[in-house]
Length: 491
Image 1 (cartoon, rainbow, N blue to C red):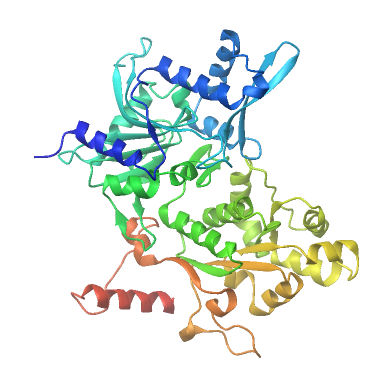
Image 2: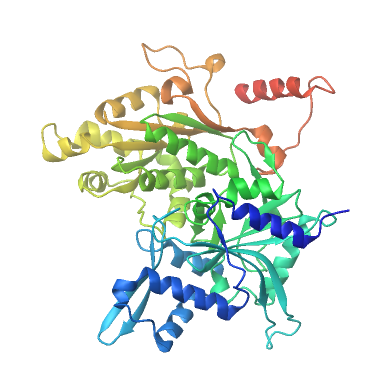
């Protein structure tokens, strides 16, 4: 007999509140009034000095409640980006405007961050919405009093899609309004099959957006308690709704990265902490542009010793698609995509002393190094001494071994990360040209993370292929892996 949902719910809460997960269970928070009172208390505690220990008045808090009630999850996401990672609300007190910090996304797993779990929240029906009913939410995770991740559980007798349909219905009924409009991520599970997806209007949701978790070896994690251990503990859960979300300004949608994208970024972060380079092998069509965007951004946020991150691409790629995609992601961030023709802006950005991410072309970088900068000048000395992390999209098409050597000799204090869907191995290596690198590993360093066509097809992370097996039938798993690997390397 399948376990009751109430038992699954309690086990999940116990897991979330275990010693190393950092969530605190709040059984006393059950209604909208409870949520707002709790948020107000945390806000006042985190802003004691600014408030001069005077609690928010009824009118001041009414204004804040209105500011936190967004028209869409996307609008909430824009607000939650904050200013340099700090999320504020503003109130007028006399002649002074008080800038109150709601959340500091640099305070992950510490500082001013408060992590709480609630369950069986009572979402009352909307009298103006025909068909609306009173509902009870399963489990919701609050960061600094704000609902950020919502979980619906079913027992093993039901499909996880029942949880998805339930959430979709709740959104349509207007249950995710007010402070719940800030939810960024949904999780659904039937205990053995668990998926997550980004928050969106009910009319925008699709079952194709549901994503299962994979571990670092691309093995699926379906068990809901293991999912909680891997994804919903702190700091991972906080990072999921801050570091691993992207706001697509063009489509006005909130996006959450897939597991293999997150593992790649984390592998790059780990390598960069010890000054090491490497490459990411992600198959064509698996979202390398978004992965590389977030990776380049997060390296700057996470590694204080890095002064600049440079996303380096070929001019064709920038002109045709990457510039548009990057600009759409960066519109709600502090990143500006360079004009491909303006070498002067590149020099200015590199020499200005600000920690920032720069998107530029290999051609512009070469012109700057070979023609624009004069040895011995202030700009030359400043730029050459920078600690720079280069992230190279389509790393073999964008940068040849000779070009990389030239740039690397100039930026002697640099680390490099290459993204490719078609790595170069010993079997298909470049022709020997002096002592230049001939394989991807020789050029960039070890493979930090791989997500191949085999895994992408299995996960439906890329468009389907018409696959015809031309090899032996009924292959054993180990032999099949060998065949896949050979095919991918040859491609």
